[in-house]
Image 1: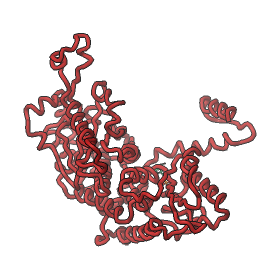
Image 2: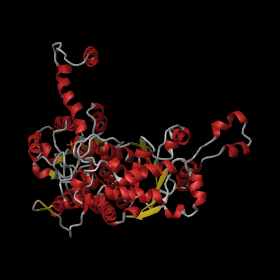
Image 3: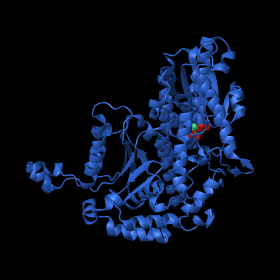
Image 4: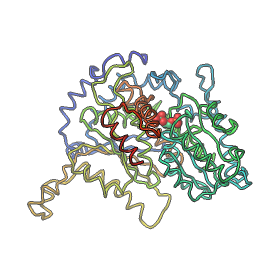
Amino acid sequence: MSTATTTATPLRARPAWRALEEHYEAIRTSHLRTLFADDPGRGERLVAEGAGLYLDYSKNGVTDETIALLVRLAEECGLAERTEAMFRGERINVSENRSVLHVALRMPKSESLVVDGVDVVAEVHDVLDRMAEFANRIRSGQWKGHTGKPIRNVINIGIGGSDLGPVMAYEALRHYSQRDLTFRFVSNVDSTDFAEATRDLAAEETLFIVSSKTFTTLETMTNARTAREWAIAVLGDESAIAKHFVAVSTNAEEVSKFGIDTDNMFGFWDWVGGRYSMDSAIGLSTMLAIGPEGFRELLAGFHEMDIHFRTTPHARNLPVLIGLLAIWYGDFFGAQTVGVMPYCQYLKRFPAYLQQLTMESNGKHVTLDGRMVDYQTGAVYWGEPGTNGQHSFYQLIHQGTELIPIDLIGFGRTLNPIRDHHDLLMSNVFAQAEALAFGKTEEQVRAEGTAEAVVPHRVFEGNRPSNVILAEKLTPHTLGALVALYEHSVFTQGTIWGIDSFDQWGVELGKALAQRIIPELESQAEPELHHDSSTNALIRRYRAMR
Ligand code: F6P
């Protein structure tokens, strides 16, 4: 089946979809208490393993039949064919006419993948080698700043995919980082971000990595120009740029226009989407932090999950299962959001990273061939590290009126063993999943001697779904596998919905309108405004406050 024909039948007309609709009616009121009581083995059967990750999906409102039907849906939607098309470098990003080859970023040097006559794996490794050489020079102090001092501070300037991956990976892998280097990340065009990131740093010891796929993004270029002024103001002259600025981009022309020598530029390619780029040169700050060897381990983790995704039957395939469960809850139960709760402080930025990955990818309303969808696509992803979230919003997950499937992520061992913290932390992972699934009945509440008027308040209806994802320990390898897990689950969902998970036209309109408004805010004379009455009034009020 070709990729084109797989989108031809409307999703809701597919036999597996229809079967799932019927199945949903039969199963939607089944309680997890009953599903577990009737099938005591499900906790050991509804699990999957791959690339060092263990997934327990037994506490979801599914039976073996549900999974079989969802897998059939994936087959009918051509998931296997589309996966192969991606790995072969076909132009599956149709609206931008591009290949989607983040999987090539983590292929080992020994492999080759020829796309349009070019071995992309060889190109990837050329850049990785240059990054490694540069990283070693910075980390060893061999690279000297303008005044002859080694670099102590690294500031990544970027936004979206050129920021969220680097900052998430730095926080996640801080334990493995070279501790005498300081890393900061500036993304927001709000000058506060730059001011606070630089206020206590010496320019002569600071390196800026200007990360931007296009090198035209308003926020990043504004911050980069501010950084250049800041550095030159202290260091005296333009020649300092060569020692204190490097660029990561696909746009060599804009990089040299900015004044960065392309010798100090690390490239990548248009077939790497911004939100899929943390393992490209966009990960330069990550490599500076954890070293080239650590970065190689990270890539190996990604690659292991890629192989798992490409070769494991769908019914045992981690990203496919996670993707299918999201479809099950979104399209059949009408769930609007998915919570991702890492029980690991190092993963505090992981939910923010996932928000771009999932929502910029699957927040789409038309199919690949431009038809309006008549089903729900991308859910809202959100989350916070556990146990913090338990003391703020978990109330709503347990007793609110919304159905919120959540992923709980935990590790067998901590990187900071102190007293019994880790057992306390992990006991909460298991307890939350248990409480959500099984709840507490009225009888149980009464049996505790609860006053009658309070009984309804203390009942937990349960039957609230969760996945538990376990890994032995947070390492660069584990992080790579975890990110690739979600990347491919996004791909699985996008393939079933028949949408383009690799474009992002929805971010354009706001950018264009802001360009029109900037001169209206800055002009000396009162500008003539031609917006709607609300926008006109807001602009006038801002001008008066300014
Ligand atoms: O505006 C959205 C977006 O295009 C993202 O897709 C991208 O990750 C981000 O902006 C930054 O783009 P760039 O790396 O080109 O600066």
